[in-house]
Length: 299
Image 1 (tube, rainbow, N blue to C red):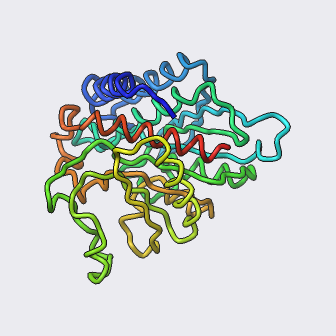
Image 2: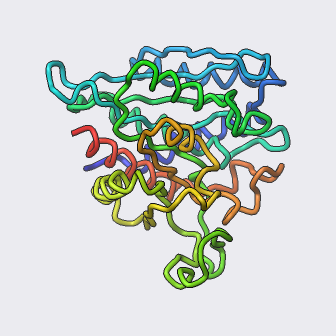
């Protein structure tokens, strides 16, 4: 699959600069920043000729908004009711402009949807920008992903795979730059990467098949981006720290696609999480790989 890496990289820089540079911290107590963020994402998708739906819900007494676009699968095909969902949260904690967490993920999601905007698969593609992933909403019913996952289950949506983009812009090639979650048994440590130069695709045990399918598709889009893919038990709490866990709670298969967050990036939830700290060339490869994986899953 051929996607123009230079154009992708240029667009990624623009998205992150607008979200983390121009808008900055994005949380409900700062309504102007939330309105600007919603407006930016909607404008990007509208320019791609997507119809954008606003999904509003109560978040600890305030109104929050998820943004949803969907490209329906091939009409009449038996798989058209099956959904492959790519999602990312757009909010931050109040202490950070949130370049890696999580403007990087929104940027990649926008570019993947742009690359696939004219592709109609057998399955339906859904893209969701989630509100309220960060504290004080995390692990509560007020998370945007919790709301969307619950509604999907109540509607009977057939989500065959949810891919959660969570911090996908920080890479380091130095030995020892990659930490290992404490819950991983020490006998497994020699098998795990020690350099923070890869994208991780992490599922729970129920999602093992999606891990394998994602890896097959991702490798069709990029040969230069290392991918570490694994299915782990949810007792490893670090794998539940993003929107993928909301879909696991509704028994949907889901993966977290991540640069591993605080296990690698020293700017996590800090004022220093700024656009200049990200590696846009590597993010472009992430975009190419994820787009190829989505296309593979939609087939």
